[in-house]
Length: 350
Ligand code: CP
Image (tube, rainbow, N blue to C red; front, side, top):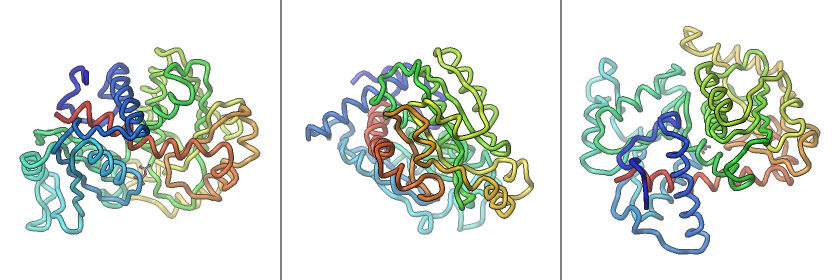
């Protein structure tokens, strides 16, 4: 397999990779998916490799796709349960014998295995916006094997890779002329991260679609990520616009990606502490922001609904959309987590 300088690299954000490098991972993912469908074994791709997976938050898709994926490639996944592991801590944040400095954890694990994958966000980092990313970057600084970001507050690159793989299966690699409607959606939870929105739009932006993004005025995304998305779209022949309603995002769209995410202005560092109570009241003002049949009917007749899952049925999306003709893509998107991550691992794990 031609991996074009990817072996040994960390996979922390899609922004660390060129479009050509992301396409190399997607090409590998598609080849491995075809093998899987045809029941052709590819256990010779990463034989005997061990992937350490550290989850500080729950997961269905990410855990199981990595575990099944490394096994398919000939390797083994090792799940580290935070409650039975001393918590990795940044320098200066240690508690004697309860935590272990990240520099030590990373060096020990990288003597024993071949990659370290980490998910860390939410309450466990006090909703501090960049803390999960800083922790993952600290692992990468000390690890001698690739470090993989399985989601923190800012980025979910594995999800972005699977999302753009799904889009390419629907429309091909060239997304110019395709309208991707993207929207905030209501949820009674105030704990759903913004990272999947960032990386859905970032990954797609490399391939030239017209992204029309709808959100209530308070639900901005990270301006630095937004600038990068808009710049990519300008370079790739697409466009970026922000609108006020899910209807405008859905109108004549090929895809509507509608999902809830937190209000960044009610979390640190903008707020001095997480204000989930105020966020719940704010969300209630927009409780009709649901991807429903009426809104999906504004899109193209063969339009698809996308969501990274887990979704809050009856709030973010109706059963009729998710279980109807529009929603089938959501399960392709989930399945592609397996293939996309196998493609990525086959490229970066030596
Ligand atoms: N989409 C996603 O990352 O799902 P999990 O939280 O179940 O891993």
